[in-house]
Length: 76
Image (tube, rainbow, N blue to C red; front, side, top):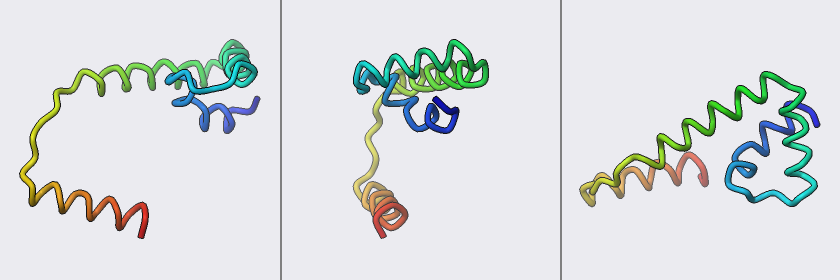
């Protein structure tokens, strides 16, 4: 596995969404690639911190603006 392939799969790996073979390929790669192992550890820390965030209520008008911006950036 190349590092570029690993980077595309890192979040699917952390969410346990990979098939058995791909999961094993990812695990084999991080055993031999210090940079990707570091990326995996840092990403796992970031995801854990994100999960600890508390949900907040956003005013309806701001929510509409955020959704419109998101749609224009990713679907427009």
